[in-house]
Length: 341
Image 1 (cartoon, rainbow, N blue to C red):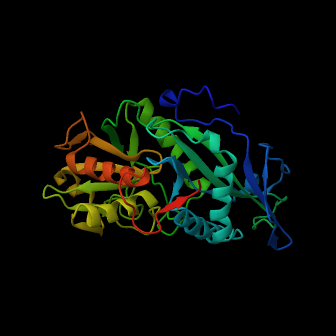
Image 2: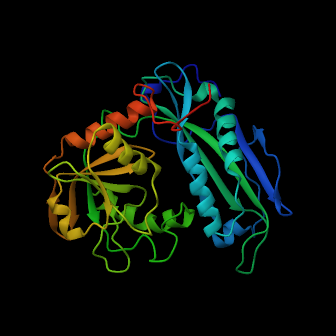
């Protein structure tokens, strides 16, 4: 596609088809070499495992143009590791880690003109995913799979800056106690769709899901991890076996400790103590940190001292430091930045 006349600063956060994508197939117990192709069409049998039993998982990461004009991705090795965990849990064949990282590099390089320029606020979103392709009518794993990566340029998640959002405590569960909450399975996101649509209709931006066993502990939202700041500037994040291990959250905790000198704590967080925190944010690839201004718990309003006008001061420092690392303005820890060009 011709990207010469794109208004990068006004690009929305949505899908724009680009010219090249990576495709590899698993058959007869092994992966083929994979190819870069122009074909954006997926052709599968009507009885394919993914259509019958939702055997699919995915990842999400970004490519950036840095301050010195380089094109890089951020910690793709962790996306590869997390996809390996997802595949194992869903009885899907593992796509080798080194091949995953190389495929990410190859797809970005093949669409290099689609990587937004530095300073535009836009990035190139990268979506690796895998699904069962052969006919499966009995409940069992598929025998054949396809692994694909497409990319799409996206604008900043928050146009005009990140404004605090309002969320609510959900009456529904996001994941079962010993289910699939810790992996990036498509079925987890399908389960959250009803509640996110309902939340939007009722004037909320997101849902806070509680632990499914006792419904007393904070877990995550439909697509992001929580990060809290105490009144004495300690960073606290919920710990649970049914929370997706966000790469952004894990990176922010290192930033907090190593760059900002803050105390960091991963532990169970009770809903009853949320009112005592000074700041709250949601961590994820798309927005990095979405500040939360208010949480509604069945009529009870929890308003954070950081307010509804802007990010809290500690959350802002975390955001600025991590995005500075991603964009090349701040030196990164070893291994965090994967250079493509």
